Image 1 (cartoon, protein in one colour):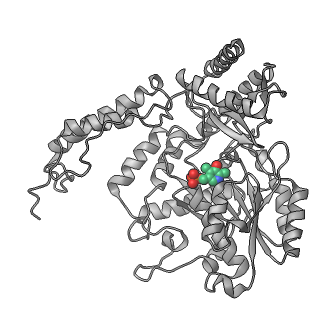
Image 2 (cartoon, protein in one colour):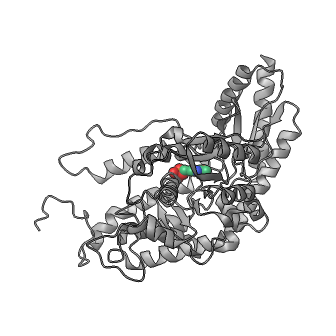
Image 3 (tube, protein in one colour):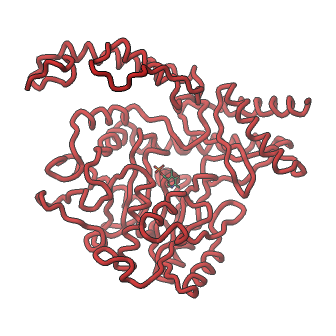
Length: 479
Ligand SMILES: *Cc1c(COP(=O)(O)O)cnc(C)c1O
């Protein structure tokens, strides 16, 4: 082709004739990224937005490299900075190096997870890792699963298979079933459960919210009552979603008891372990997932507590044979073989090879390393919980199941609105000091939420947070 209008490093020449130009173009990028990453601790965890981009976002002619680098630098300076040890607000983990490099590999090779023909090695690898994670959760030898672009999609796929299997809606329409199907989930289940219900023809109102106890865990009595009520109301409950690690407070539903009820009423058990699934790899904490081995489907996001660069999310199923009947759409133009074309069993068609970064990180860090990251996050959480408990002016919202500490200014006589305002003000105060905590609403009241997840957050950083909280409190009291 005539490439005269393209810059010399637009592509890597497959004959290797532009190595110099490629290096010239790529090296300053790599240096910029290196400086960005190694300087994360000195920047705010959540910088104020200031991004100096050229007005012409799609110029007629190529832009000079210095200009691109300058704009990129400005972009990075204003980006969320989860590499900062002061980033403790959300479950956005800092990516490990192997997963970053894995993403480069995936982009360079650019295989398409659509089919075996377009991604032979990566398909086999993803299939094997799906089985490995499935068996780690205790799903047994028939388990199968694939990676999708996040827990939201994974929940949607889990519920789609549940609906198809329980209402026979793979080939036939939902209307033909003559049923009004409903899903039961905790009142603080992730919003994606509702979103999925809306997309799957159940309507968002098709999710029955089951009340939780004071620790944010689904009440079994309420669940049983909700199942019976929905049966009486001529709706058809077909699935229970148990959450292992709610997004707002990190609570783990009593999976074992939920599994018992699901069995009794012949309901699909879907466990949303997007965040909490990671503790299956900690010998100290895995007992909290007891009962997950009875799930029909499980969501687990390695891009959360496994520090894999986003996106990386598993949807796992107990029994591949269910997928063959209720969630399989053959690709007409691709060969079928022993290893399946993943897109035939996935929400996705063309899909990025997320498995490369996951595999690379598992190899590089090993089970012991991941276990340490989880156990240490728990240890820092214990530290934070104790810091809250020793302060009469702070109120611990609940004893956490995971690495999340929620607290607020604890004078119970404080009017709700004032307590909420203090949370917001304290959040801003902390951010000015290089610490980001999120503000969560639990049972109608705001609380500050601390999630230690960055491997470089030290004991002293946790202590510093509470020294700053004290300073904020005494300054407000003085006013
Ligand atoms: C984060 C999360 C999700 C959604 O995952 P995304 O990757 O953000 O789409 C679902 N459920 C729970 C419990 C989560 O914590």
